[in-house]
Length: 172
Image 1 (cartoon, rainbow, N blue to C red):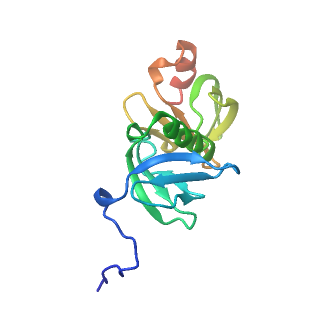
Image 2 (cartoon, one colour):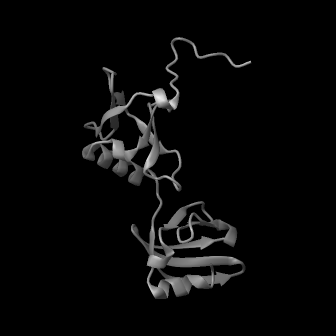
Image 3 (tube, one colour):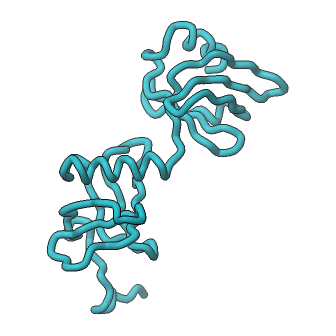
C-alpha cells in the first residue's frame, strides 16, 4: 500500500507547485531558477520538455541538480522575455533536433534510405531503416528518426521547396 509523503518531502500536485519568478545563468553558465516564495534559488537546475513534439512550448519540467522536479512550467508564455530566452537557449543546446529546411537527395538501397538535407544546424546526411521511422505529428509535420536514434523534424512539409518535396515523395 502506498504511503503518503513524509512531512519533509516537498511533494506538490502540479497545480500547487511554486511559480517561477526568474530564470538565469550563473557565472559558470549553470541554470538558476528563482521560485515565488522561496528564499534560495534552485542552483544547477535541469529542464526537460514533458511533451517535446506535441507541446514544445508548454509543460517544461524544472528539476534540481539531483533530478527531482521542483515545479512544472505550464507555458513559456508565463515567463518574462529574458527568462524565456534562457530556457529556449538551454533547450536548444540540450536537445539536438535539427529542422530540415531542404532535401537534396533521397536514395534507397538494400531497404535503407539515405537522406541528404540542409537543416537549421547545417548540412546532414543520415539513414533511415524503414518507413516506421517516419512519424507524422500532423498532416504536414514530420519527425524522422535515423538509425542512430537522432531525430530530424520537418515542421511543415508544404513549406519545403518543390524540388525538396519531389525528392522526398518517393520515400514518403
